[in-house]
Length: 524
Image 1 (cartoon, rainbow, N blue to C red):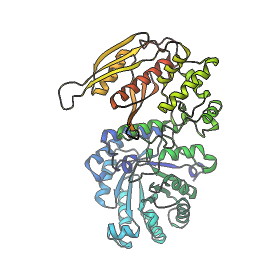
Image 2: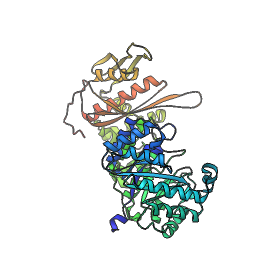
Image 3: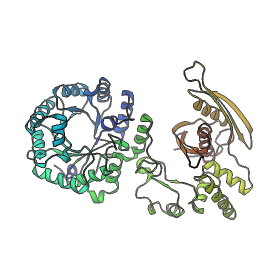
Image 4: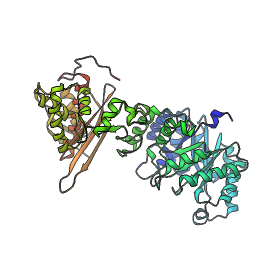
């Protein structure tokens, strides 16, 4: 095996199988195909597309992915039974590269409580199923389910049996998220040294996050000799989830100096894959989630912002562009300093004169104490108000909606916006729903066509006062603009955040009050 092959880590993605079977993450066949396309673009080596024997829909999804997704190896999970294996083989038939992934419990608790099988019966089932699978597809992976809690001597026997029967990938899963980095490192070192007949096999690690150590345990296994890491985008999966594959990708990209290994991942596609999964499943990632969370490249503290403005390396060990984001975000709040305020104002086309900065900053601090995070539209309005010039910001004055769920009557919305140059403008629009209709009305008024990329609305507050915070991202001429609103009600919050993002596009792209470009802009 060449040095490059020895140092190449195979990425096995189980978003569509282990991830999808978790409560709240179910996907249709069409959605699985879309996600599989994102995983291919991301550069994963193996896509576990589902569990063919689990349902007719799962089998159809695997078959379609096998037929339409070229590049990665397409894999189906299978129990150690002939019916499961043949079902998996049928679903995988169109694949250019196919793998059947057989699992069987090996720990004492699994052998007695779930399988009611002796050690010899387990070994016989492994041999029989792996041999059959090897006749049906290009490669076979065997997983000793609950390997971490299996007696070492029997685990060695089970893996030797699988390797002898034809398995070329030997997976040692921490099925219940029980192990620690030191423990799993020691286990993999032991297995790689003692499993006979596995010299040409790849050892694989599959860690769950029940104790919050899935990524750390996976890295420890790699350092002990594992050459395949299994995980899911955004860390989704059973219970607390799987090893987050995007974190693994960036660890290898950022710390190759320590790990001495590489993956085939195109990390610039991470953000797109993460967002695709969020949209399909309706489950956003937490703001503080590593790599893909909204705050991963955001800074509010004045000291951090000043450092990042001078040299991003002061507080960023990797760039947002490395995962496919356009740049870092300076969050303007009560912890922000003058440098960040001035930089954001300049970005929005509202450069503040030096003699005006202190006055604007004082007003900004007062506003930040009141509202928390200051939205771009609020900042633009504040700057123009403090400097005595006219604000060019659209403001939401009124919104009325009619929902028509279960009715033949089309939903509509009536929106009133106010602008310093155009005054009060009203529009009535229809849409797929009342919120969509309101967004259409805003587009008619402002003359700007936008596509919603992200929208989240959360209730926050204590002591009897509850506010709605709406965060939105709009795509306007292939450029992303974020908007935010905090109001007492859901409906105006969503529409106001939309207007906020429109205002940011107007400011940054140099548009007039009719949405037309007034200066040459470079559009990404």
